[in-house]
Image 1 (cartoon, rainbow, N blue to C red):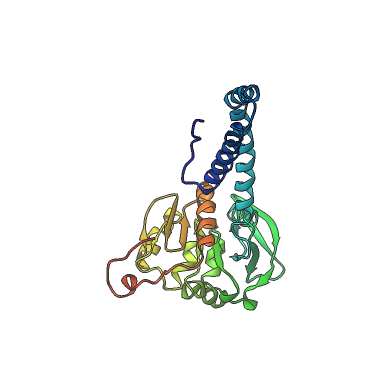
Image 2: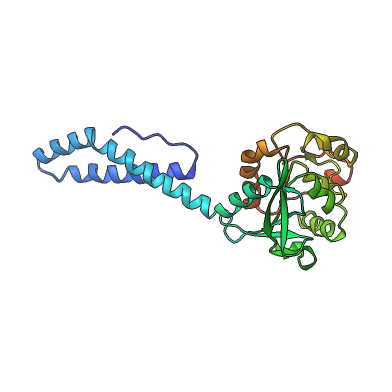
Length: 266
């Protein structure tokens, strides 16, 4: 029987193994069958079995992909920190991606009860605040997400509780994802020296003055720190965000970054 093709993807490999095993079980049984039944089995293997394997493999493969995607962030708890004026889509899309991957997510804010979004050119919806910033600590979460919007980080970066909370994720080497103007808040932690980042272009000088290595790419990852430029980069940002959170804590403060050696990115 012609060998089915696979690749390094564990889902594809599993499907191939199941298909290949079931086909070979039939081949082993063939020797104990009458000659007429052997001929019928040969024709069935040649003409019909490949179609069944292909259809079954497709169904099973998609089931496994859906299952693993839904459970990728199971048992992970993620904080999204925003103030009034955050860019709406930069909260809703990451929030959707995190929940689809199985994460528990808290919207955290200096505001009480609700926080208001900015939707491109005007005020957007009000969103419920799950926790006030004064009631949370970084050790209670596995990762941090910082949406952008011009007004939002301008409020956050002057709030001592917010900066202490964000710094806690650096201290514990936990994943941090910030998009658009979101990296502005990271400057106040003093933790960007030697770190590779991107952002909305107007933040380039501020980030470089903080010691960051700014680059113009849709998504940049540096040892668990994920950054992107604008809402157009959200698909790549969300994919990388979920991937880094799934990996867990990273060694964000390697000796190279803090002792004058060669900074290694990962």
